Amino acid sequence: MSSTSPRPVRDAVEQAEDRRLRREARRRWNVFGVTAVAIFGADQVAKLIVRGAMDHGDRIAIIPGFGLVRARNEGIAFGLFPGNQTLVAVLTVVALGLIATVLARLAARSPPVAFGGGLLLGGSVGNFVDRLVHGGVTDFLDPVAFPAFNVADVGIVVGAAIVALGLLRVRDSHDRK
Image (cartoon, rainbow, N blue to C red; front, side, top):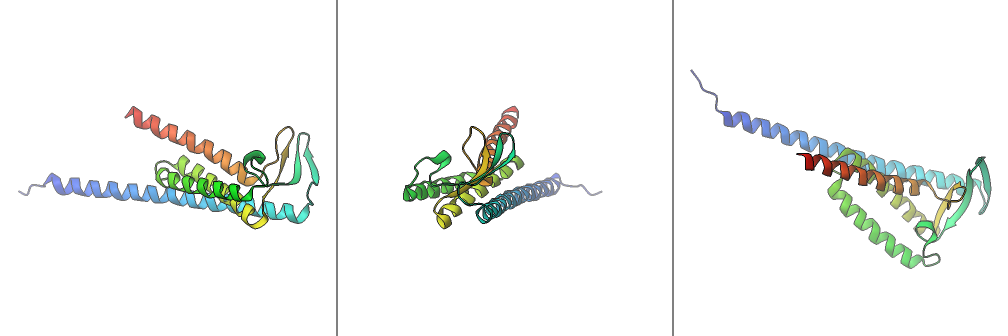
């Protein structure tokens, strides 16, 4: 009669669990990367279309309270630090470095954090490229009583909110254990 040792079974289960965790982390990194590339691409294509179809200051009403306008933001969020491209570039590089560092640690924790992180990073890089190539960010989405913004800005704001909510969810589920 042969006796089966529990150790090889336990080792096999642990190895299977390690493989599963690596696959899940890889999927989250894929979500992060694909989302970042998608928001960056959508932002750049939208800005290219706006720059090609509209002159500076042109406005197109879409629905009451919302339209398109071609505007240029030489500052950062909501026009802060206008005309100081060196300061804006330095702040942007520092912010991108911090965002990338933090998200590199957090993206593998949960699918929402990976998705939100991709939106946040892709949008940040989209606006940074605009600053480098065009000397300012092209804004075109124009709601009434709010500054004009662009697809990258939507990615940044929505991504930050999803990351925050995702981290709260991860923390909450971790606290319950």
